[in-house]
Length: 143
Image (cartoon, rainbow, N blue to C red; front, side, top):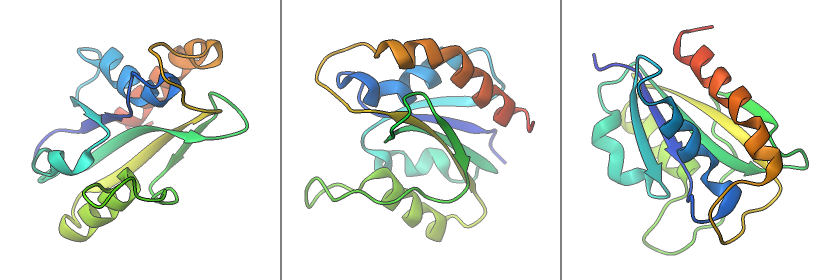
């Protein structure tokens, strides 16, 4: 069986939406797991997930509380499709769950107030980065 896979989702060019990718990138070499920067098209990485015992997905979700952390094995609500050729991450993971029932998918969802065009995190999420990294490392080691 392949080792744990941590997937950072989001677009770093859209401010806080890129938090998943930034957290995952910061963990490279610091956890015993493969790291993947999944961007916004999770379907292209199906082969990377196949044969894993567990996949941890880090993603931004709209929230009243920036930096709020939710950990769940349940898929977050689906968002409206952006177009006919894409699936949002929750819909893609729903498909993966059907095709790869042996893989445990865990979401680490990070509350963001809004995404905006431009690189860099809001002050609230920049301040939350150490706490987010620590929480993913706990998940990676089974704590």
